[in-house]
Length: 326
Image 1 (cartoon, rainbow, N blue to C red):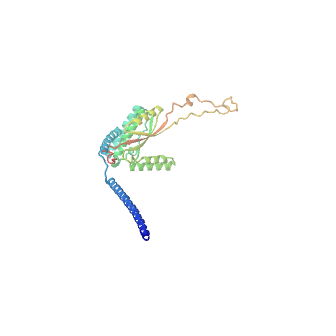
Image 2: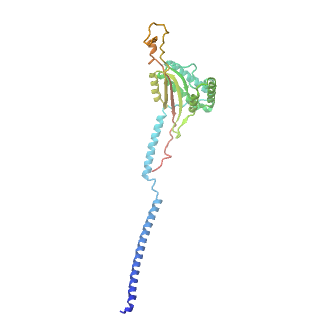
Image 3: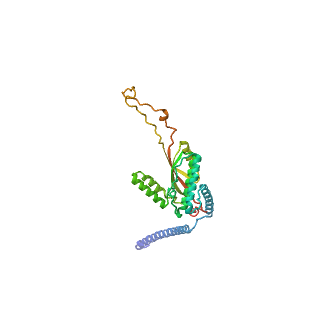
């Protein structure tokens, strides 16, 4: 071998080794690129499959939902039917017949009061003073007005049957524009004359004049206030009867005031008796026991506030429109 060619030969060998190494590295990188590209393609295909698939509703879910909807509909129908038991459906009357129906109601309640020994005020209007004064209702108000008439009669009979002593007043939701204006004018005149404290009652009546309607359309309710006198036994009986009567009635507030007061002990005038106590004063003369003891003899004045509910008929398929399959 010619020594002059040795560097050239060594350089060629080194070049060939470097070229082989670079070729191997390039082949390895291309292999990994192909593998990564294949994985990416597989992932894209899986993603597209997941995005485009329509797994819902499955047949099993649809069948389960249909059965649940059927069961719920049957339950709702049964519940609504039970809640509507005893619900007052007023007789269709025209405005000229209302006065006669009102007087007939007063006659029936006066008879019931007499049978149970309940005292009622003369010409008691049961919260319908505007019509007791001879005014005629507006035809558009008739349906709700007759329903109120029947409701007041029903509640009054419950109290009479419970054995109250007397009835003082009945407040119903006054929703009629003419009756509401007449009541407001009378209240304004009374306040001008007396400077009294009717503001609270006026605010209560105004707030109660609107029939409350549940936002979901499940029920409506009206607020009534009955004031009467009754002993403890009759009051408890009335509350028990109201809580179980139909249509659905909920007592919201009860107030009882005992107006009986023990009489004050009288002190004899100085010198009326020769006896004096340790302080040198004439001692008080005790009253007889029947004048001092009042417990058990009083008849408290009671005010009972209550809501009477009204439920609509359940339509077929209620609750199915908003059902969602999951």
